[in-house]
Length: 282
Image (cartoon, rainbow, N blue to C red; front, side):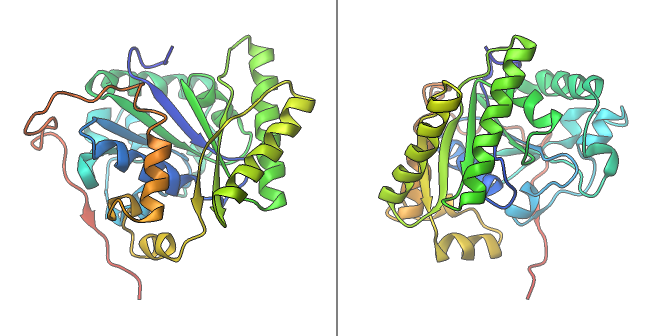
């Protein structure tokens, strides 16, 4: 059961930084928003946010830290991005947000719960690693996606995160869902399967956990180009391999949030400001 009433909560995380979890979370959200679902993308990398950068958008103020401080409402922090997705942005370079106390983490969950009924699905993009924030957010998620790459260091850290989640769940008597693995930067579908299978075998041997593969993404010049141009690759034509891969991952979540009835618009443009492009480098 989601912590946010009846709105499903999906956490995208990773054991190692730089594996592409923000790229996955952002494009997964866009892909689901394209179907008409009301998607809220929450930047849970609270001290070093990146989702607004991924979309090439300048959100200005306020952000989550202001809402936590009681300086504004959480609704005032929400902005609208590509395909109608809504973004709850975090701060960047704020030391006080790098690791929340349990009280502040509970307050953040309460703030998100306030707005949860307005959405069909909430996707959180967390920091990497096994810190208290990551473990806490995972403990209230309906689904947990762990992003890794074929590199040994990334695979080792993905296992470490699954182990930490297992230990945290046992210690707190919380039934954390078995994580699902997304292999990024794979050379093809076979390498994606092989990497996920290797991780699953290790987890079955030492943790009695059997993480399934949720999908894979290719090492792609197109994805790199979209990232450098601050544009979601999920907006590319469906015939593109990259778009097909993210669509397959999104299909694993569609049962959590049935497609809404057709309507001209399910957002309120008077309440949610659109994001504006930031200057591109170079």
